[in-house]
Length: 140
Image (tube, one colour):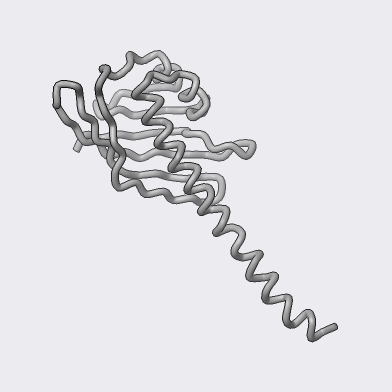
């Protein structure tokens, strides 16, 4: 019996230690999908999706330094039709029930004008669901 435990204890320990890493990888994938869904919802003024993504406590600091709440974002004017946004250099760091995403958002207006914004998004998991709780953007 002791020989059996000596063999299986390290195997069980390896699985136990691997589970958080696997969970973090899954969380990272979920958060990356949420970032893309957020861009699409912003582009198409999809308020229902934005309501699901943004926590009620959400606060954003815009490139001009203005603070906006979830309500402000939901009531904002849509981006001009024909605009595009592309996320680049996205880095996701998950630490338990908190996550931070950094990267660049490349915006192109229908008239061809472009802008690049550095961003940092803060996520929190509440009741098993990830939500965006804060954002900061700066024009590059």
